[in-house]
Length: 209
Image 1: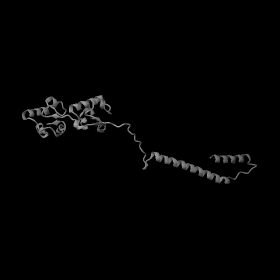
Image 2: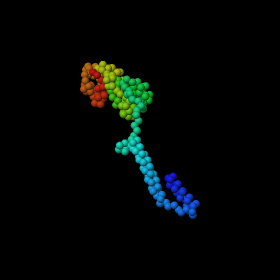
Image 3: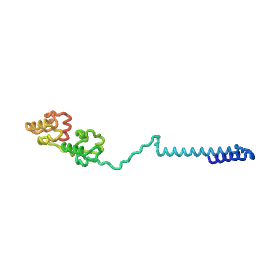
Image 4: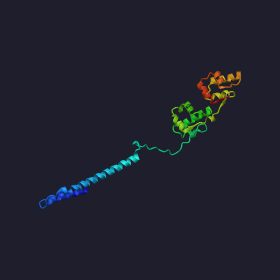
């Protein structure tokens, strides 16, 4: 561009100042110079465009030309909390758990004698809106830690304190024991109490004979 401007300026200068003394220059002789200049400019422009396209493809696009998503690497490893051995302070570090929810969880766990499944947290009203995937991410339970009730030795006070025993179920078991002796199986327990299968399935984790 500088060279073209210089040539144009020279032409105008000689034409305006010395037009009478010197004849107008023949611009045809500069045609080759202009052509070479234009070719070099086009080559430089194409080279820069190619470099920009290559850089964008290498850093922004995958092989199938879909922009890559930056994945955030976790800064720490999540250590799951054992719900049957923790206290409420341990639970409050988990998202969506404040001191009240943590206290209710521990209170219900102690009444049960321990959790055998994370799904049991749905039985606590204040925990029902917490997504299961969050519970699975931060908590773990070991069914072997569950405290069991000896159905043939437990008192009314011990049984009624458990969330799965109501007054009718407890009294039915105590009356049967006093008249017929020990209960020997879940089948016998279901037969004398007429408990629903769902309740019997829950009791299997907490009752021994």
